[in-house]
Length: 158
Image (cartoon, rainbow, N blue to C red; front, top):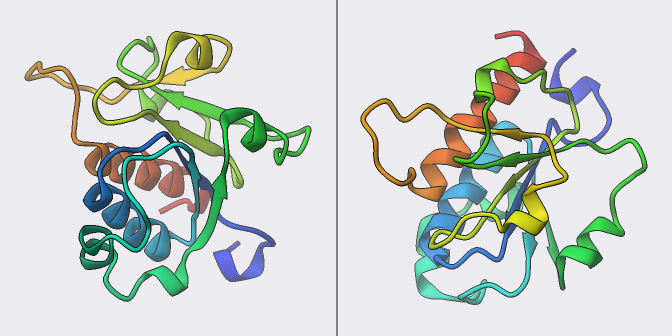
């Protein structure tokens, strides 16, 4: 089944309190080419009218199903009862390639400077990206690209 044959977005990329306009612009472009919805949970450290965001997103924004949420609680209120939310975190034990992603899943990412807080990630199934060379974490837009393309590969059978 292709994206055009299915109702709703392939998946949902959820950014909890993102801080960098350029990262979010790049992530919006990734969402546009995948047919993924983008959810932004406030507060965030920029405005959608910021020059850096507009430069990064280019003309892809019209192809993105964009949702803004006032808080985590407000976002949760929009989720259907059957929604699956995956926390992308370096604290997880399971790699993203070991998850069983399904159409409509939500991939949740934390802010660039601190990641997802324990209170938020604790109750959610978590997955991580391999980092064999070490380091604290990948750039947010890179992490979203890697994880969302793996989810799309599983869902679409590429």
